[in-house]
Length: 464
Image 1 (cartoon, helix red, strand yellow):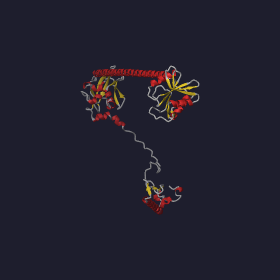
Image 2 (cartoon, rainbow, N blue to C red):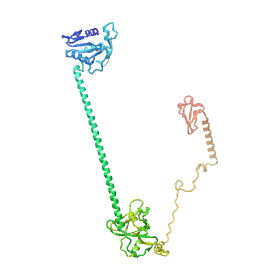
Image 3 (tube, helix red, strand yellow):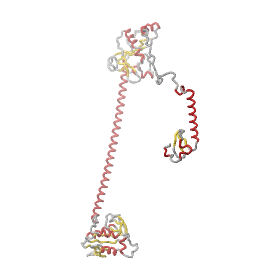
Image 4 (tube, rainbow, N blue to C red):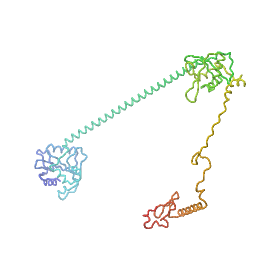
């Protein structure tokens, strides 16, 4: 290999080679030293045995320090090295067969890292000897410094990344703690709000109970106890009560009999309709008979469904709760209207005016309506409709002709369905011809009859 390199270098213009060229102080001995007329020197080192990367770097830097460019002649590429070096790959090792002539080694072809492609060894040597050749990666020492700097940068980036991850983990932990604290505070606020609502409900219930107690305590039987119940078609009970806020006196009434204790139906008691529609006049009559100046409670319609009514104070418009009315004991009520003393004559006297009002003037005769003209195509038409034209106007000759034509059409369709040359569609009115693959409708067999569709020019005539 050294001889082959010497011959190749000597053949290059301006170059000469020396084998086993030694340093003046014998610091190193180059296998083949290429010397140019300009003074440029290249040391070709034939390295057939294994060598570490650090040794390659040390020996290369030694040549660089002496002003010599190192070029390594190696059997295989070392792409795993951290530092790229000028290398010519030959594929020629210690166990390779020797050629008859040394120059044959220059014709070996292998992947050359100098070019990034497969090429001959001689071409790689010529490329290194070319005056324009330049090694762009720098000296081994410079590359090691760059590599170390890059490693330091990577380590710094990894440390910064680890610090960011730790910082992110710490921020997430703080955020989780903050969220947990916020959730705990929210739960505490909800519990506090629930406790406040419970206390407010208890306070409202206590206040309602106190108001109900004051209302029941204020209720008494009407003072005019010596006045007998008036005559009425139904029984009415009355009680004198006071509004809870201002204490205004008023009289309330009911047509359902008071019970003790209240029945479940009475727990949500509201004055029924008859208390307002039929009871007010009897209450006014009883107050007039008793000579009482007690104010009568007003009636208020409660919002919502179903529609309900209740009593309100005539002075301050305060609502009298229905459950308060139902909670009054029987001793608080006085019967002011009774139907037990009502006779037929009394009822006639009470409702004579109503019976008199039933007599009305005779109804005036209404004007007669004009008959409405409606056509047969109108949806409001009622009655027999005219028969279709084909039933009434065909006569004795047209109808038999139509029936015969219909029968002939049906027979032709049956023959087509029975023909094995045709495939019938699901609707029964289209046929596919198995001879030519075309289709025809109804009984328009046309050129498909008797296999006429296979004749010359049949398809060009546009049959389907």
